[in-house]
Length: 576
Image (cartoon, rainbow, N blue to C red; front, side, top):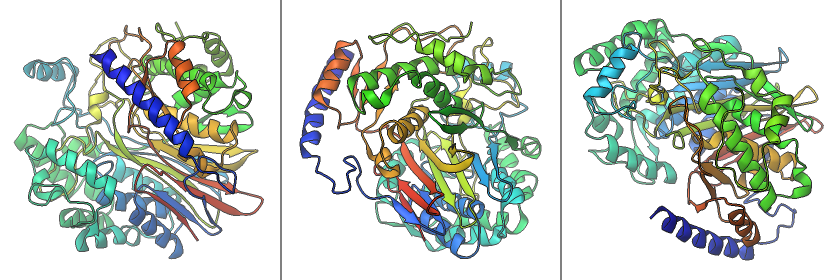
């Protein structure tokens, strides 16, 4: 059956690819893949996945706030307007360029598993449910939400405007209502179908009488407005030590949950140094584990061994090399990426030039089907990515998520937000670096990125979407650096996505034993697709799953910002 579906998918892909190539109009400006022009602004820029959230951030900049203030305000608006991918029940990561300090800051604002739920107790809970894996929904996968502490950590160190001013636009929209945008309405309907019957107040606070809001329908979220107002007036401690933590503790105790007020009181974000590789003269920065950002760096180190520019965008050879680089990096991801407080992650070795060269030597002319790590469930995930920049030169690359769509589906009555389900991403293999432990951060998929050129900020960008994210980062960078695309065109061009690699939730001894599936958007040539099939790739066709891109690029010579937004989503880049 799988082969039949694959064959049908390939036929559909070939037809749609041929049609899309025939229908591709000429562009006077010479960018054949661009859906629209990049946005250009001198004083500030905001790019998010929801136009109203973009406008919230832009207004903060116009009112005198800086890029950090605008990022927090936009994130608060997205938590309201796009709860299918974000919210204060989730985690946050950020890379920030501080113009005053002339420094890149990295923030890991991800939460930890309940301190009172041991590995043995987790195992017993799974046995009761007749499963070996931590489930996607309900109480078991909930970890401490880190986003709120992330906001206040960023604000305390780098912000300029008061938090009550920053959160007020989102509070206003939550009270008065906002029109739900098209793609978000689609995913909201899926979330409502999955979570309406869960313990707590999901149905009451996240739907309209049990149904998701329609496209264009006005949605009010008064409970979230009240929670935001508490944060604006009483600060971070209200969430982690005060009345919000107390409500959560009480609800969890009464309903079989595992988080306690102590888990919130002991939560801290971590300032970290971003790590980087130089790719053809550009310094590409990601955050170190427990996230998967260094997978993009590993892929770039491998791909630098090949002349992609000469090979050409969308060619059979380029797609083959990128897919094989992904397979190699993701097997390392499956074995080594974990909370560095619990496991010694060999980051510098994994992203080294020497290791990239050795891994590149393993690529031959055919699709590999026996890929192992080189040193001796994840494909899905709904997330928001946003980026901001201001007149002072500050730039923020921020990503935030509840993980699977609307997270665990658990809503504490009167608080108005859904708890994340990141704990699903632990392995239960005791020999795995990412094994579940109490008080540990799980493996994370969400990754912000930043690029420097000649010691100056060049681009802040991200591509949300589970295991697609490192693959998306690499495609954006190669599209611009190797294939000469502009910032908007690089995101609009057809994407590929390889699935089937070993996951950090699998057993430690597992590895990729078949070729996986190479999914292609329409837009690739018949010759390239046919060539990939002849090389042994299992080519598939998928109408979604290719991520969501936002970016801001700084042109130091002209002193202007270029903004780009994902054409596959509801978003917008806007500047002034």
